[in-house]
Amino acid sequence: MTNANAQIADSIREVTAAVQSAIAEGYRSRMIDADDLVEVLLSIADRLDPPVRETTNDVAIPCPECSEANSDRLIWQDDEFVRCDTCGTIYSPGN
Ligand SMILES: [Zn+2]
Image (tube, rainbow, N blue to C red; front, side, top):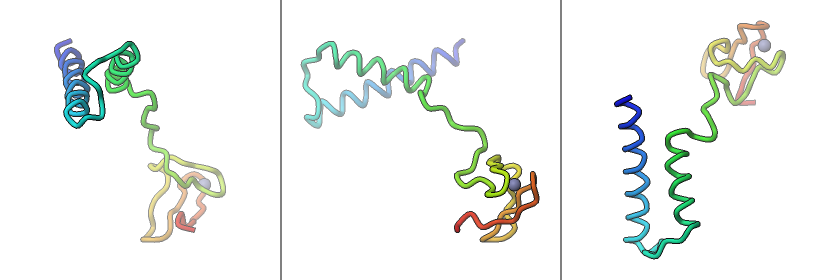
């Protein structure tokens, strides 16, 4: 629980610091309204629980033969070619 509390406190501090520097640099008014409050609260929530989660081990360019995208099953052979452990295809992700 202490860890979770520390994470929440850190998120609030980070967002607060971002708001303070935005005020200091003139990007944000000292007068806050409901929209600002909502934005700040959502920023804190997004830091604690990012809306787009990191995908597992998926690579950007999957196997052209079987669409395997798990980086653990796509093995670099040299600087150019990757071998797919699922179907055995060797391909060049750069092309
Ligand atoms: Zn494959």
